Image 1: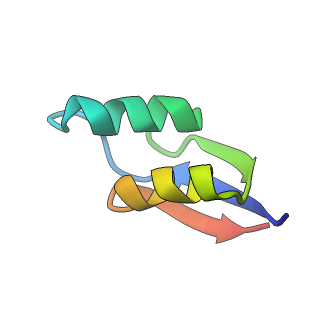
Image 2: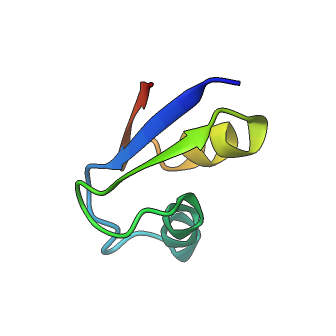
Image 3: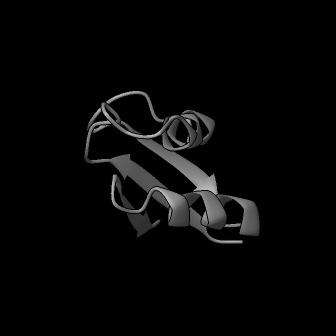
Length: 59
C-alpha cells in the first residue's frame, strides 16, 4: 500500500466532537502537525470526514 502524509491545517476548536476524535485517531495534535499512515480504507474514511481541516499528500 502507498504511504500518505497528513497535515492538520485548521483548528479543531468549535468542531463537533466526532471530528475532534477523528483527528486524534489520525494522530494529529495541533496545526501544522504531520503524520504518515498507510493508505487503507479505514484511514481514507477518516480523511474524508475531516478533509476540510487537513491536507493530504502521497509520499
